[in-house]
Image (cartoon, rainbow, N blue to C red; front, side, top):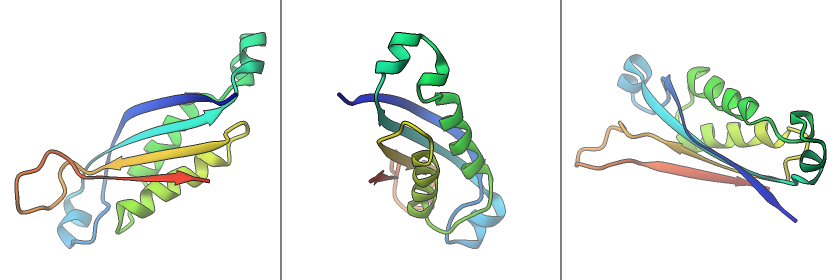
Length: 118
């Protein structure tokens, strides 16, 4: 059996991008995380220590968003996914990074990339 935990809209201000203006001015990034795990132990014990703590996942994403800048949101998504995958009990992870203020010269709603491991 595979169970899922999903977090959406984790927000932070970061300086990621390939353009000097992005590195200088920064912008808001949003992250969604979905992990697969198994709830059986947590259901039996009703104890957070027997499941994946979603606050820890949110913290990983927020630190990455607000931390050391990278050029590509693909790299940011991979960084977050790999760190989440190190948490005990996680079987797989999918991380979507949204860049709604990307420097695109036409009207758009959002741009995002998704990294899934393993």
